[in-house]
Length: 205
Image (cartoon, rainbow, N blue to C red; front, side, top):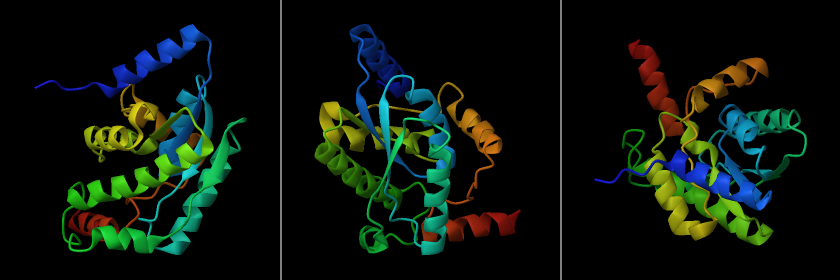
């Protein structure tokens, strides 16, 4: 079975654009400030970045607003990076999660959530005329990078920027940057189902 190394695929693209002397535009879908920290630090060397915040899976609006504000606060530490907020429509998440409420985190419900968020990000990238689009989600050890890249490639084709940001100690660096910038780090992905699962884990410990 041929396993794709998405970090190596990204390395090839970066090498190519450097040889060409280009700085392509990139719409970077972000799930939260902590996950975006390393991605921005790394990618801003090679791309002109707009962070796109679209996360209807965050079902508590107060939690959603807190995460948006943290994202914007962090971006101010990275001159030149722009910010765009997508619509906040949790009902769209509940619609795709219907019937999958009891599926454990990391299963089919999450895959549908990936597709929901990436579809919106890809549409925004097309409207904005961006050269590339990708997501910070691949930095998380709890997220399926293979599935994320497969969905991204299906939706965006050659405009998809492959990634596995947890490689090269990316996740470790994101933790360090979270401490450096005193970022709010949530203990669950965002949806009510992942919150309940996190609460069960904590109670068991």
